[in-house]
Image (cartoon, rainbow over all chains, first blue to last red; front, side, top):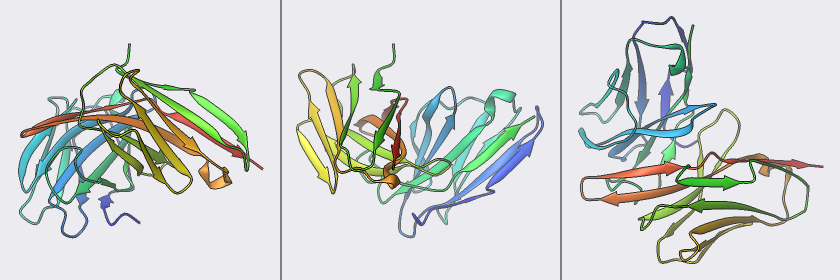
Length: 115
Length: 114
């Protein structure tokens, strides 16, 4: 158990809909990262937040957005969902902000299925 | 062509045997290179982290090497166990002030048979 929690574990929704994925980092970690893992694309970095501020951006679509709240939990919002958005979404956390400089601890993931 | 390519795509070995997984990258310089182990349906777990200037890093039965001249990294697993069956992912990371980039390989699927 990494100490990172994600909810929900599974999510099934229809095309065009909007969903919110939630992540709680390990106690004391200030940085949260979001990743998407699909069968054809592998693991892809979406975005990083550090202490409430966006720190680094990866291959995040404009239909997706994220935020980190004062209690350091983070939410990933996915809107106008398409079939291709079906994937495992992972959240990870690390103690500080430097991208890749600190150990990242991954949560169990949220499996999103868009029908 | 992917900037981080792993080989083989999949590998089957017998329990107790050694194996080596390869990661070739085209991007440099970078901040660090990592190897992750990912069990099916679970989040990746870090095995090793190497900076650009390091040549080797060990974590128990896992040893990662890095050759900056040939732009290759390898992960060597000794005395394999059934629990080593997983996907192994190589990641190259650039970190710069207020930002960065992570580039993932597609992974090598390792299956250890009894």
